[in-house]
Length: 436
Image (cartoon, rainbow, N blue to C red; front, side, top):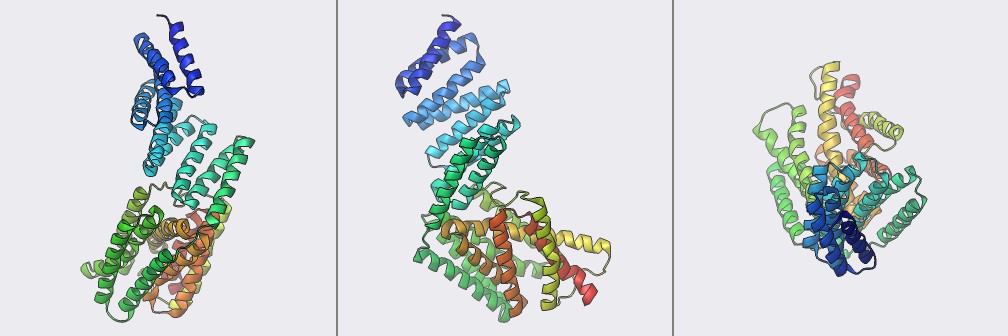
């Protein structure tokens, strides 16, 4: 049997597939596949496996579809066919989406994105971004869905695909309407308010009565969040409670490590930041969050620079409220740069990643943007009760609202992180020497 007959089987299978005659299509694809293998035609063999994967998806046989996509991926890797690899990975993502394994699905979509971007296939890049957004939409993660739909729209606009852009904008408006219809159920609202009150109480006890008792309270909050997050059925709410577990962890470590290791106060920050980064990393992995989902993107550079420069004013103002002692022994360029780097990474980066990039986004997914902004700002403020200044709490709440609103508008942590780091650098390193 010649190559013409083989191609005839393949084309017949394609036509049957388009007419939804999937069983008949499979029969023809199997005949074509056998002949392609006999001829040693790896490229057509891979394409046939890919098409068969699509057919099995339509038949609801996700095990076989996954097997065929996997075989196609292996062949495309041998052929060094980047586009083929992208299609195979998209197929594997689709299978897991059908199984409602959304995190795993997105991991395959991200791999497919890399392939299409490497091959500069912007059309497929936009399609995959929209597919990723759809998985977030299925979960009710409105903010994540909006983010990926907007990224898809940017690509469509770049390649001047008007129909693709219009459809994506329509989906964005649909998501906004769904998000505005989110109802803050009394039980959920009551739950998060109780945890906020518990965190505040633990901070007050720690600051004004007993550090040991405060640690015990934080341990109790940590275990309550752990148990509660595992019992909650709604995935988004479970993710929110899980992300809040990092808060008592900060305090437990913050009050125990310095007591065990006698070091200068400046070095407390990186020591405490290590488990904080670890917790954020684990949360991102469990929730299937990519780096852009938590704010690792440039945004508009001029706006980010202006945002960063606000740290100078904020740090100076807070100094007049707290008037802390400097964290460095000498006011030299080397000491200032060294201390600023520590504070930028340990406070700016670590705290903004957790509070804005993870917690605020999770609150928004459950309760919407307004509640998310206010609630996250209150949590952030509660973690500053230990400074023993009511005026500073008002200032911190205002700054948290400012940072949170900026994050909602830009979905970038770049300028916010630098603003936070610069603010602490002026507060603890520069202004104490200039005005102290």
